[in-house]
Image (cartoon, rainbow, N blue to C red; front, top):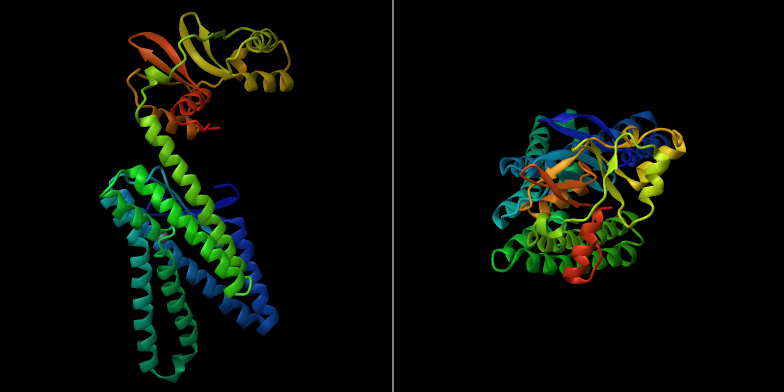
Length: 360
Ligand SMILES: [Zn+2]
């Protein structure tokens, strides 16, 4: 995620902290310092650190369940509004998604229970340890709020994912997502209104409401796109008429050629071998930074992805969207028979449901 710093790894998963989160912790420390001196500042910052350790455990439990279903977890990032576990994709079976979603709130409840137990032990240990109790009580309350809030059926939050999983066991994945998205966006509006009117302009709630509203819309769109793409193969979507550029062509020559047609991405050839791909933008940037006499081979990307004509377009889309390849070549036996580019998707999706979309 943009603006985040990796601070370590837990069970092999990179743990990242967003800069806005670091700023928040410093502000809370400063607030404590102004209100009650260095001791207060230290306790406030320790509280935030402990709270976010709880958030990490919450995200970690989602991640471990997802990983047990074979989903790769890319990172856990701490933001001022909570944690985000970035996954390669969501588990597809409703049961797996439901269990993955519920694991986080269950962890928060378990933490609240454990801390509540510790609080009572301290109570019996005597007045010497009493000072830690209000602090622990706040931490118990915070974990209960995290569990309760995440269980609201506000897709894409945990409760919303559970709702979609329950719905998806009786209807299609797309229909279940559409309903969960509408419920999620309605909940987001309610949370936003509550943040403004009930809680006297609680900025945190308003920001969360916006995140939910946008997140629900975006994930709903991705699911619809995926459903369309799953019905198409690379062989159906590819462009079969395409031009190639020789590796040793100069940038000036290549650009003059590239701007004549509608093609944006060009396979780069050396003899009959495809050695790379280059976009019109790469040529322009190369011309600007290197000069007209440099060659296509110097600015091309050697990251060439190849798929058979029967490959599912949903998988091809994912590879393009992740940026692992700029262009996908469709290969049959020894021959390249077509080219799939981000433009191919826009055309396919336009043809399928009239709404332009695609990796950009
Ligand atoms: Zn969660």
